[in-house]
Amino acid sequence: MRTHFSRPAFFEGVRDIAPMMLGVIPFGIVCGVGAIAAGASPIAALAMSMVMFSGAAQIIAAQLLAAGAPFAVILLSCLVVSLRLMMYSAAMAPYLRPLDYRWRALLSFVLTDQAFAATLQRFRESGDVRANASYFLGSGALLWVVWQFATLAGILAGQVIPASWQLEFVVPLCFLAVLTPLLRDRVSLLVFAVAAIAVIVLDAMPLRLSMICGGLLGIMAGVIADKMMGVRE
Amino acid sequence: MSKELTIWLLIFAVGAITYAARLSFIAFFARREMPPLLAEALKHVPVAMLTAIVVPAVVFIPPGELRLDPANAKLIAALVAGAVAWWRQSAVLTIAVGMIVLWLLRYVVG
Image (cartoon, rainbow over all chains, first blue to last red; front, side, top):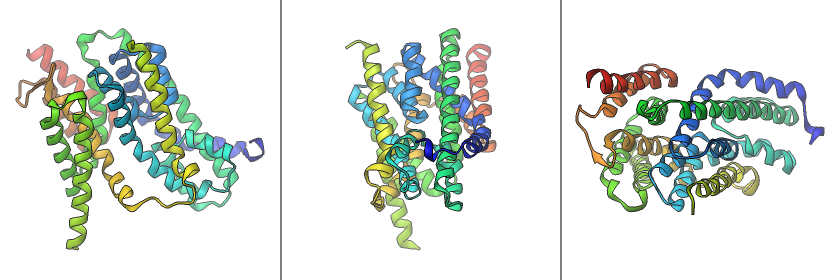
């Protein structure tokens, strides 16, 4: 593993992803708050961030846990929100192919929205796989460490602040901050409308299945709308 | 099964799922292209799933009563926060405005 490692590239990766921490820290805090609100112990709440290392999966797990959803439904919902990681994996795969399995296993673990966005450009431009891998590892490592500290801050906040403040409402607000800027085209608005109506209408479904079913109906509406618009063009 | 044990099982099961998704094309299907239908569906996952998470948290008052009227403080707070998020793409500002509106409606207005 050492033979591939480039210290300057590693720290370059750390430096380049540092500005993104401004967006990551509030999200990590929200994950800590959400886990505590769902009834996790502080250790378990931190373990969620260390092992799952995915804000979307952690939040949806916490929300469904709080709502009393069964284990299988939580797993299925986390699987759907994790599909996006497969997209990053597919985009990164050609560049990581020359590396040995240990490097690929390690870099896969720190593959996130932010690390993907920060490093893909460099992989496209530079053919130095060894330096690129270390750069990617640097970005991912900083992100992982900052994620743990942000979660810890959220865990402390979740324990200290009284329940009457309704701190758990920061969770939907945080998602709203990500969601709203995405609603810029007609197909996205349609996906939003279908998912919103479906999740309300299906609320009476057993086992808290409404969230996953509403989401899947929204995705289907989007795929169909894309197809129909493609035909018209 | 105790809640704590359930949470720990969940941590490792979901951890395995997220890691498998990350490894998928890098390790398991390294020589394959992503199926086109999957790629098309993936584009819509963020909007669809975020909506499915946010909407119930805003329009339902525990224990599950649908409230689409102005007396629902969470609905108003979310609409204001959504407008802020549209105007300035800042998570911190969106969360701050949303919480302040919620507290104002709850404790100041009544």
